Image (cartoon, one colour):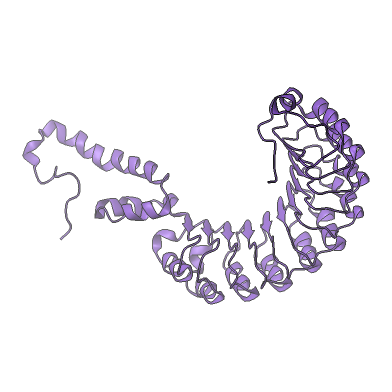
Length: 366
């Protein structure tokens, strides 16, 4: 027998005058569910699930609203593989759009294969998949999950040393609409993966290949020549690229975010080509040791929308760079790191604020 969880109104009909019954009934059946849905949409997944246990009425109200069950978040949780399979077996998750498994424990290829075989219908609308730090996932797991997620647009598999170019091949074959890709720390992907990505995803908007140590100029050139829609490119801690490839970055006319920390071969000539990326907002040049005033001045003149610039550890820049940045970027620059630039005059916070009134942060690196 189902209990009454509506405050006892139906158990005490005499307490409500007939003329008041209709408005109260309408309020209970229409207004209350709407309020719960609005409130529930702001709650963490765990709290939302707890609400299901409050009453059968609330369970029906929440479970019947697909917009509340579009995200599955198991990041850093134990037994994540089994939890994921169990969740996607429930009808309320049949329209899930985002799954976060970042550093989830106990997730293996076998779980992704189970999803492919038993829950593929629940993955048809999946757009965002985060497998960051899931080090037990291999090319086999990538093949399984991507074959069930043809509408995926964002794929992240940071810090995985088991995935190779074979996994990339499965990704591009199965998911045709990816615009955001994170391979950071995937040390076993090579230039072949970059060629596959460039050929399949010419509308790619974001690419992170931090510490992908097998990549060479050839691999990055595939991307630069084919993916002209890129808005974000992260090349952090990749010191092997030559100046030739940096000079090709002028092709990325829509670029907003560029991280070149540790680009030891980047010269002023390369910076002058990067300066043609006129809409850059974020630029990390930390430890780009060949850069001098000539390159930074060109950047200041070409990239007047910069909000963050790090010149950390560059000995070849002087006050001339700071003055050029002040002339061109003082109305936008909020973060400027010149720590370790020993040829720039030491200034107090107040003196820097005179040059850059919007400055909020003076250090990118500790």
